[in-house]
Length: 478
Image (cartoon, rainbow, N blue to C red; front, side):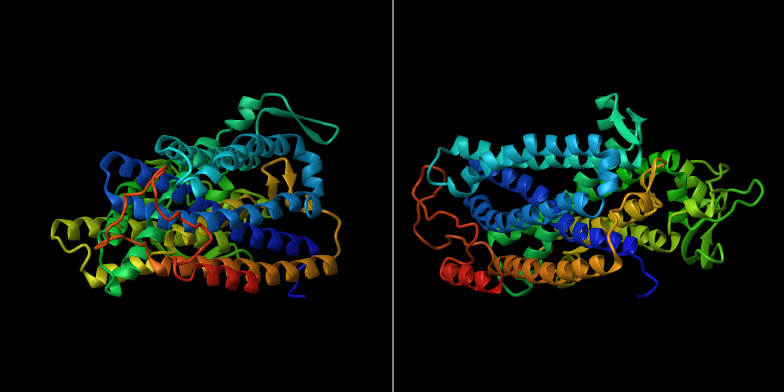
């Protein structure tokens, strides 16, 4: 069917499940740190706006965290079911790294998550804040181990191969492999940026509908400060990551650039747009800027970038896909920087919260960070092909011996279950976002807080007046 084989379906299945999964950890990482900042600011200033925002976003965090855990379990099982040859070959490296994640990050999160979500009225302020910080640190530790494992597959070192299996010889070299620092910073920063635009879009949605209060304004203000500061930093990190990739995976860079061959000693142009044709070995309809490819990728005006024709056809990544996935990521990155700069200009004119064109842009940019993360992972993983462990094991040699029919049935089942289950979860999360933060303006109330009298936040409830109905509705949908 469509010229696909069992291997192709296995790759599609893994891409489908990991694309769903990566969205949840990205928001979890960002929201966990955001919650820690909110509670810290509330404790320092006593401003109830930060407390109200903490209650609001802790509910969304809880739903997102749960979906991330469930979708992550599937990923671990797929290594044994669909990629057993890879597990047999490299499991002595990837297995311990994933185990370290469980023993450090997951146990840390599990130990303090309950206190963070349900201990608001049961423990002191200091302990509750400490629990929130520990959960935030746990999400970053999880990112550390996952990126260490995946980066080793991109730039493997610290091992030897004995009887067809990888045997670790230097764990520090394995963990801190050449691409790891750049990829860790790039992913962690991407999570913060994606969360900032998610929070900013939520605030813009409410402001456009006339719901204007200090909590909503604070959401937008904090999100735009994050965008203004972190989006340009992400661009710089991406540049360093690109230089590292050029050094260790030149074929990936050539595919990303749609660059097929060098002409004499001429500098490499930058192809802005075009359509790389893998069969014809050229990029059709190319729009080029002379010298700019060399300037960006080598920081010089005369050095050349390796071209695709310098690599055997069987060792070339699919340039058609990574050429465009990379440009989607970069294009959204520039839009993020523009949004941050526009917000600064409006802030100085005291119209950040009233400029409807800007608010619409902020709303439309809500999913931009998550789309950019997906595009970046597509670029990274497809650009590594045809290798599952770069230079050591081909993807074709890593899959389990399943039939086309078996892979077809399981892929269909994954699609149906994921859209039903996570579609309901995402719908419920968006329902929480639409309710907005509950404030106590105009009411006599205790200032609340850990150890103080206040209605506790219910992470899996919607608005206070219909939370039980929302819970029952979600249960029926699932």
